[in-house]
Image (cartoon, rainbow, N blue to C red; front, side, top):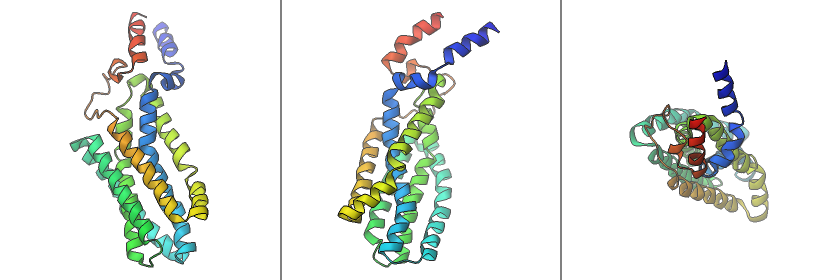
Length: 234
């Protein structure tokens, strides 16, 4: 009973402390996932607005394009996980980011061209690349944090990325398009993807690490290392 109470005391408040013990990892992961999260909403939500209001596609055509793109992109999530297990997290995520960049650029290039096949292909490429990265994301995030703060750190980074980048994406895209046209939206998306690529290269690839033995000291954070001896003595 006493041991259980000690564990409860030690683990209490970990969700809040992770912001102080691992701020670098949380910011890095949020910036990494912010680009794909924003691009997903731009392609799946705002993209439909462009196709119906600017390109003149009917709602049935845009629905079919999105349906096919999502159907094709779903297996890419599984593929991303398999590739990351074999070749590492960062190479797999980088492939997803580059594919997303290509898909977004192609979409804005052909959105108003009237070429339905090319428009559908560009959305499919973009969504498939994002899903490919999504297959790597849980493992990549989990491997950045020790056991005590793994869930809290991963959840905070993922939530922060969606809150800052994805949630306001349709509104920001609409405002930018009204002021400077759809090309401004494209540059916003590509800028966020560039930030994601830079953030990826700052993250440590811990593919194959034993999560059961991954400790605070392995996280390479001074605050975590300074706390470790005190917790061991306790």
